[in-house]
Length: 545
Picture 1 (cartoon, rainbow, N blue to C red):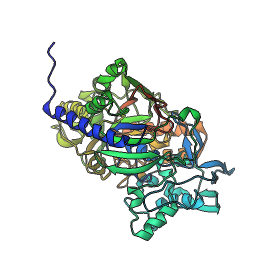
Picture 2: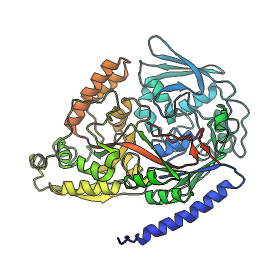
Picture 3: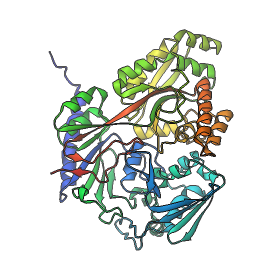
Picture 4: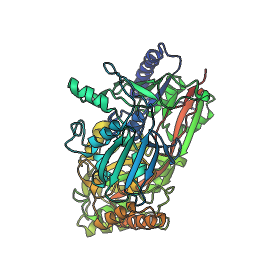
């Protein structure tokens, strides 16, 4: 059979990427016995853990930072981290944390920490996000995710009880507070480093050259090229004997093209790659030098419809769009066995998933009737934005967009495909620019609130918020907020199911798919595992000789 020639552009990209990767690996390995190279899919939008929302950026920051509490790798189970213990008052409004003793911060050129972690660092890390008048509050962003979670209004006070004890006082009980602290924005930064930078007049270096307590310290970052780290020898969680071969240096080699990532992995230019294409999974399984790592992830891919922009402000138009899209065909063609059709914002693995709601209908005639009823019998023109990079929840944004455009054309909606580079794409979406946009979400903490409130709540519909549909339904929001105020699983489940039914009726999104996420590694890599929260963690990962 004749082999189809590769497009010249892809050949050029492959060649350039391999040359760059070889130089990158050689320079990273100089003087380092064990350098692990990870072929990541894109640039992190920030290195400030308080400003990151994508799994790419969160993974980049988790190498350098720890939070008070954390999720055990590969699970959604909470465990102590920088806080060795905590106590919650009987009424659920006061949380007292006791910090670990002797936890050291990283150094950076011109800065050597003079003390271990203490309560001042915890206060700094949260006050800068909570208080608008804090000198570090608007440095690089306004901490919209902290606001989307409702923490700005929930927290009543944060107090330093002594050197190693911190108290959080809440205005009301909140079942999501503790798991929320385990997210990236809950990372603890060095107050001493922030003071040092302020004296030097370079406060922006807090994100440009971060200082944390994590297993790896920051070395440098070149957008579109690489992010480099070195192992932190004074890391508080001492390596076990089984981790004696843990890596000395870590490199995120930024490689947006899926085919290029796989080529680099096969050539040994990287040891771990993000998200091989579904068509390549069998080839990875068959390669004796590679290992396919798979795991269920709490995620959703969706088409958001900007309800602040006509005609998507009309629920009849939104329901018509939903009825016109053949989700099952998209999942079969793009995701294959790695995908399942999404019914709701919540993935089926969530305990609050509404199993009694049927799969959304696919009915073009009903869609045409709704358009005519809304005054668009001849259809209309609109924009449809598609992701420029592969993501855990969407391996091929362009192909999904092509299929959606073809479906919409059959009912008279003429969609213009639009995209930008990943950073600009996200900025446009969060800024409310598109009318229809492909995006997705991986849960940060495993709680239904992380989908239902963060992505669709009224607070998150403000400019810069993660509610990209800009949809605010008071009854929906009341149910979601009430679910936060109780830890009764039965009550919370009922409220979230009511909210899912309201979402289905209003159709601010077209939920598309949930996925099993795949990563690929060289056989020499041990200790690497998939994570349901989308984190890519390298603590304890070993490179065999």
